[in-house]
Image 1 (cartoon, rainbow, N blue to C red):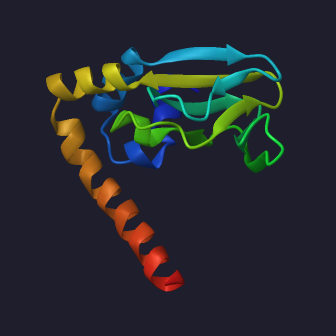
Image 2: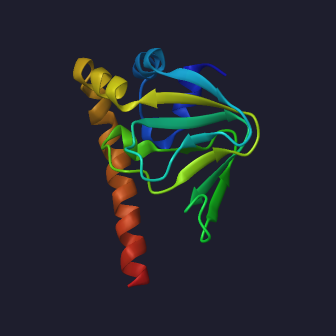
Length: 144
Protein backbone atom coordinates (compact mmCIF):
# COMPACT_ATOMS: atom_id res chain seq x y z
CA UNK A 1 0.00 0.00 0.00
CA UNK A 2 1.40 3.43 -0.95
CA UNK A 3 1.56 6.33 1.49
CA UNK A 4 -1.23 8.02 -0.50
CA UNK A 5 -3.42 4.93 -0.10
CA UNK A 6 -2.69 4.82 3.62
CA UNK A 7 -3.56 8.52 4.07
CA UNK A 8 -6.78 8.03 2.07
CA UNK A 9 -8.00 5.51 4.69
CA UNK A 10 -8.33 8.31 7.26
CA UNK A 11 -11.80 9.91 7.16
CA UNK A 12 -10.19 13.34 7.48
CA UNK A 13 -8.56 12.87 4.07
CA UNK A 14 -11.29 10.80 2.41
CA UNK A 15 -12.41 13.62 0.10
CA UNK A 16 -8.94 14.58 -1.12
CA UNK A 17 -7.88 14.08 -4.73
CA UNK A 18 -4.99 11.74 -5.59
CA UNK A 19 -2.90 14.84 -6.37
CA UNK A 20 -3.51 16.31 -2.90
CA UNK A 21 -2.93 12.95 -1.23
CA UNK A 22 0.38 12.74 -3.09
CA UNK A 23 1.39 16.17 -1.72
CA UNK A 24 0.55 15.10 1.83
CA UNK A 25 2.31 11.77 1.36
CA UNK A 26 5.48 13.63 0.39
CA UNK A 27 5.36 15.28 3.83
CA UNK A 28 4.60 12.05 5.73
CA UNK A 29 7.17 9.65 7.14
CA UNK A 30 7.05 6.00 8.18
CA UNK A 31 8.11 5.26 11.76
CA UNK A 32 8.58 1.94 13.50
CA UNK A 33 7.99 1.39 17.21
CA UNK A 34 9.05 -1.48 19.45
CA UNK A 35 6.66 -3.34 21.73
CA UNK A 36 6.13 -1.25 24.87
CA UNK A 37 7.41 1.98 23.31
CA UNK A 38 5.38 5.13 23.98
CA UNK A 39 4.37 6.73 20.68
CA UNK A 40 2.69 9.72 22.32
CA UNK A 41 2.40 10.65 25.98
CA UNK A 42 -0.62 11.98 27.81
CA UNK A 43 -0.21 15.68 28.57
CA UNK A 44 2.33 16.38 25.79
CA UNK A 45 1.43 18.94 23.17
CA UNK A 46 0.00 17.20 20.14
CA UNK A 47 2.25 17.60 17.10
CA UNK A 48 1.42 14.74 14.73
CA UNK A 49 -1.22 12.44 13.28
CA UNK A 50 -0.63 8.67 12.99
CA UNK A 51 -2.08 5.92 10.82
CA UNK A 52 -1.20 2.36 11.81
CA UNK A 53 0.11 0.30 8.88
CA UNK A 54 1.11 -2.78 10.87
CA UNK A 55 0.96 -3.83 14.51
CA UNK A 56 -1.27 -2.74 17.38
CA UNK A 57 -1.33 0.07 19.92
CA UNK A 58 -3.09 0.64 23.22
CA UNK A 59 -4.68 3.99 24.01
CA UNK A 60 -4.08 4.49 27.74
CA UNK A 61 -5.30 7.17 30.12
CA UNK A 62 -3.34 7.64 33.34
CA UNK A 63 -0.41 5.50 32.20
CA UNK A 64 1.78 4.46 35.13
CA UNK A 65 -0.77 5.48 37.75
CA UNK A 66 -3.02 3.35 39.94
CA UNK A 67 -5.99 4.46 37.85
CA UNK A 68 -4.40 3.49 34.50
CA UNK A 69 -7.06 2.45 32.00
CA UNK A 70 -6.76 1.04 28.48
CA UNK A 71 -9.39 2.94 26.50
CA UNK A 72 -8.94 1.11 23.20
CA UNK A 73 -6.66 -1.10 21.16
CA UNK A 74 -6.12 -0.05 17.54
CA UNK A 75 -4.68 -2.01 14.63
CA UNK A 76 -3.81 -1.69 10.95
CA UNK A 77 -5.83 0.93 9.08
CA UNK A 78 -6.84 2.72 12.26
CA UNK A 79 -5.50 6.12 13.27
CA UNK A 80 -5.08 8.51 16.18
CA UNK A 81 -4.14 12.12 16.79
CA UNK A 82 -6.01 13.67 13.88
CA UNK A 83 -6.92 16.75 15.91
CA UNK A 84 -3.19 17.44 16.31
CA UNK A 85 -3.21 18.57 12.69
CA UNK A 86 -5.57 21.38 13.62
CA UNK A 87 -4.42 22.36 17.09
CA UNK A 88 -1.58 21.60 19.46
CA UNK A 89 -3.63 20.90 22.59
CA UNK A 90 -2.19 18.48 25.13
CA UNK A 91 -2.75 14.77 24.42
CA UNK A 92 -5.67 13.33 26.38
CA UNK A 93 -4.09 9.85 26.54
CA UNK A 94 -0.88 7.95 25.88
CA UNK A 95 -0.45 5.61 22.95
CA UNK A 96 1.85 2.61 23.46
CA UNK A 97 2.90 -0.02 20.93
CA UNK A 98 1.32 -3.31 22.00
CA UNK A 99 3.60 -5.12 19.53
CA UNK A 100 6.09 -4.03 16.88
CA UNK A 101 4.18 -1.30 15.05
CA UNK A 102 4.63 0.71 11.86
CA UNK A 103 2.88 4.07 11.49
CA UNK A 104 2.60 6.71 8.81
CA UNK A 105 3.20 10.01 10.61
CA UNK A 106 2.20 13.46 9.42
CA UNK A 107 3.39 16.37 11.56
CA UNK A 108 1.25 19.42 12.17
CA UNK A 109 3.87 21.82 10.80
CA UNK A 110 4.25 19.82 7.57
CA UNK A 111 0.46 19.63 7.23
CA UNK A 112 0.11 23.41 7.75
CA UNK A 113 2.87 24.04 5.19
CA UNK A 114 0.93 21.92 2.67
CA UNK A 115 -2.25 23.89 3.39
CA UNK A 116 -0.41 27.13 2.71
CA UNK A 117 0.71 25.92 -0.71
CA UNK A 118 -2.52 24.02 -1.51
CA UNK A 119 -5.42 25.70 0.33
CA UNK A 120 -7.88 23.58 -1.66
CA UNK A 121 -6.93 20.70 0.67
CA UNK A 122 -8.60 22.58 3.52
CA UNK A 123 -11.69 23.24 1.41
CA UNK A 124 -11.99 19.51 0.68
CA UNK A 125 -11.61 18.68 4.39
CA UNK A 126 -14.28 21.10 5.65
CA UNK A 127 -17.30 18.86 4.89
CA UNK A 128 -15.65 15.96 6.72
CA UNK A 129 -14.85 18.15 9.75
CA UNK A 130 -18.37 19.59 9.72
CA UNK A 131 -19.90 16.10 9.59
CA UNK A 132 -17.74 14.91 12.49
CA UNK A 133 -18.64 17.97 14.57
CA UNK A 134 -22.34 17.46 13.82
CA UNK A 135 -22.08 13.78 14.88
CA UNK A 136 -20.31 14.75 18.10
CA UNK A 137 -22.98 17.35 18.90
CA UNK A 138 -25.76 14.85 18.26
CA UNK A 139 -24.06 12.41 20.61
CA UNK A 140 -23.94 15.05 23.32
CA UNK A 141 -27.59 16.08 22.90
CA UNK A 142 -28.72 12.42 22.95
CA UNK A 143 -26.88 11.84 26.24
CA UNK A 144 -28.09 15.08 27.85
